[in-house]
Length: 389
Image (tube, rainbow, N blue to C red; front, side, top):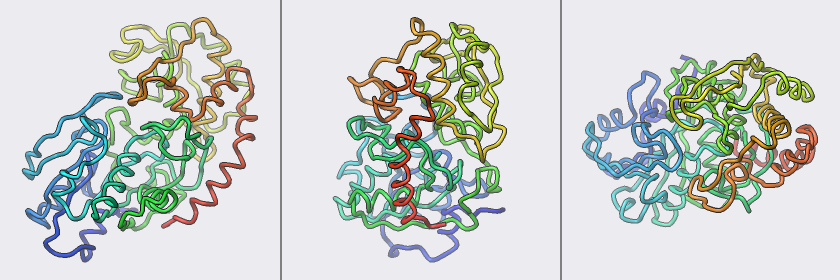
């Protein structure tokens, strides 16, 4: 085993809280140790009834909810008997009543290194509640599956903040979940009593296949590390009428719509340097979600070199090509999207309406990248203050 995740490091050492304190756990079905044993089972064995409650993020405690704005109810965990409080249901913020059950909140979540993945904001809400109600937060760190070196994308414009973007981060931030917690806690003055349990063996150059750990999908449409690698770009298609591959066995790797045509799209893509990937033409038919039951002409996005591949640049180029080639057929998804009822979902995902408008005007992706490069460099400098590895 190359990498030891935070849960294994925690249980191999003295626990960083006082004996008898009540422990809550933010987790889902992907929260397992290096032997695939679930964190709550390990904690119940070690802590007994001191494991007092559980919290779940979007997609449900068992990762069963397929799409955006499909809420989960509170429940009781059959394994431990502890109450499970959904933080993607009647509320997305933990309440005082929930936090009355704990002294320390453990966080053991598989993140995918992308600004729009909502687990990050559930973490932030929990840290805010911990600061308000005088509780301790301990984050059990895990690998960033798409590495810790490369960052990419425009910085979120706070006019377009939402539950898929609460902070001015780039689309691909290059931080682990523990580093993100440290970054948000200090940069945005959450000021929670925060401790991070680092991994052992993880290096910033690692992608998930390098870790030696089995992949357990953190959400229903994140089935493999390959999905995570294309996700920072392919998630853009959630803001359109095109299928992003939901309802197929290759979500986010497949993309298409009935009105697309392979040849003109590929010719348009040749105008942009898109290293490390190959658009393989195909036709697919989603069984659910957008374009369900319809033949979609599109592509399987294959990553041939993860080091040179730039997912955000790649999907921006494809989005622009389709928009410019098929202006009458192209459609943006209409609100609501992640509890925002007025702004276009694509603007929330992009994090800035100006990016969409520039794409529509034909501004090249290279020009866009140059325009946000200074801001991205500043973020890169700041994030390094929170590196653990």
